[in-house]
Each structure stands twice: as structure tokens, then as C-alpha cells.
Length: 216
Image 1 (cartoon, helix red, strand yellow):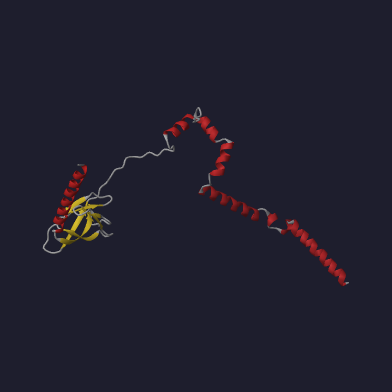
Image 2 (tube, helix red, strand yellow):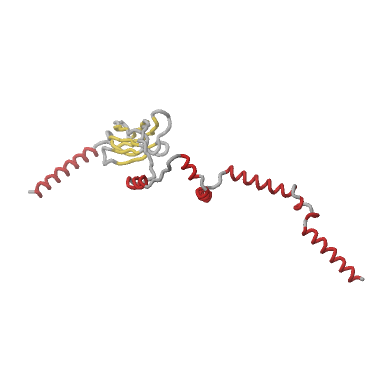
């Protein structure tokens, strides 16, 4: 009995499918073309998906300028869908020729997403563990005293990079120290106060006396 019922249902489904296909093939084929624009402006809506709901849900896509062109039947229901726009439906009208050209519009749709709050804990258990092991000082003074301790400052100096203002001040200080050593500190600019210059001068005199003695 089950096999007979299954065969009967299969035959009924096959006959209905063949009848629907025959009715659809009797419809006239047309070249359906058009351009899709934004309803609030003249800007083209790119890459719209067009679905033929009347014939196996065939999919077609518009190009970057909103233009599309494909073959369909008269009376087919076409669904238009695109990200950020409301879905639209239309029926291909009957025409005396083999071409149907339309200008379609789609209205923009604004979707307000709910507010998402991001927490640094992956689960409630991690939050409970962090909350139970949280060490909070008694008042703001103790918190500031702990943050300004020598250990805390040394630890932060190893990981916190210098900002642009600190780098600029360090460069200006280095340039100032270099100019001061060259102009104010005469030991670096005047050879009379240089021990190396005096040693070289004495060495030259000694070498000159030796050369004179050899000539005599």
C-alpha cells in the first residue's frame, strides 16, 4: 500500500510539473533589459541581483552601471535585491516585439543595528574570576601613590614609547649641548688648552732637533 501511495504521489507531481512547464513554454520569450537607479537620486544602483521567481529562480546580475539584460518570458515575476535597498518585484509586460526595455528604481533602506558593547572578557566565568580577584585601593591617594612609585614608573618606561614632544625636546637638548661645547667650552676649540696639541707640538720640536744634529 505504501508503494502504491508513493507511486501515485510521484505520478501526480510529475504530471503537475509537466503541465506547469508546458504552460510556461507556451509563453513568449523576450529580451528583458533595463537600467536600475536610486529612487532618491539619479545614481545607478550597481550589482543588483535579479531573480526570476516564475522560472526555476534563475539569477541574473546587473553590472556596475546598473544595466542588465537577459532572456525571460512574458508575465514572469522578477525580484530585485541589493544590499542597502528594499527588495522590489515586477512582472514582465506583454509586448508586440521580442524586446522589453524598462527603467527601474530602488529605494534605499536604512537599517539601525542594535548597540554592541565589547567587554575584555570572553565569558561570564572569566568576568567573575577577574571581579573576585580585583584589588582596589582604599582611596584615590593610594591609587596615585601606587601608580607613581619607582617600580611602576620603571615598568612603564620600558613599554611606553616616547611621544613626538619628548623626542623633539630630546633632540633640541642634544643640539644645545653640542653647540655649547663647541662655542663656550674653549678646550674643544682652542688648541692652546688641548694636551694633545701640546704633545704634538713638543714632538715636532724634538724631531726637528734630531734632524739638525744629524746634519751637523
